[in-house]
View 1 (cartoon, rainbow, N blue to C red):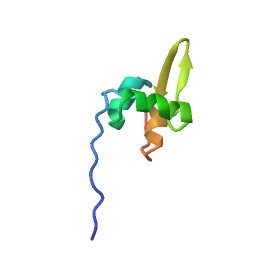
View 2: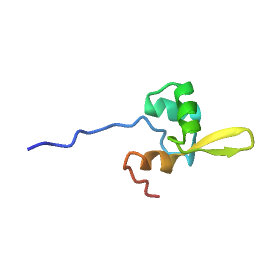
View 3: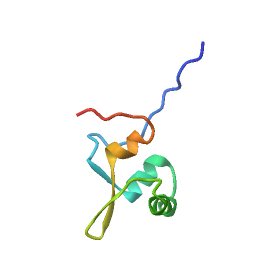
View 4: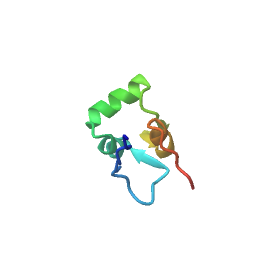
Length: 70
C-alpha cells in the first residue's frame, strides 16, 4: 500500500494574506528572478498595489491543491 508523502511548507504562522515575491520564491524554493518571470508568464498569481507586487497566499497554495481555512 502506498502512502502519501508528508510535505512541510516553510510558511509563516499565522499565514499573512499576501506574501512578497521574495517570500513566495523562498516557499517555492526558486530564485527571486524566477518568481518574477513566473509572474510575467501568468504562472504565479499576483496583485499589484502601488509599486509593489504581492502574491495572495490562498491563491498560491491553491495552485498545489492546498485549501486555506480561516
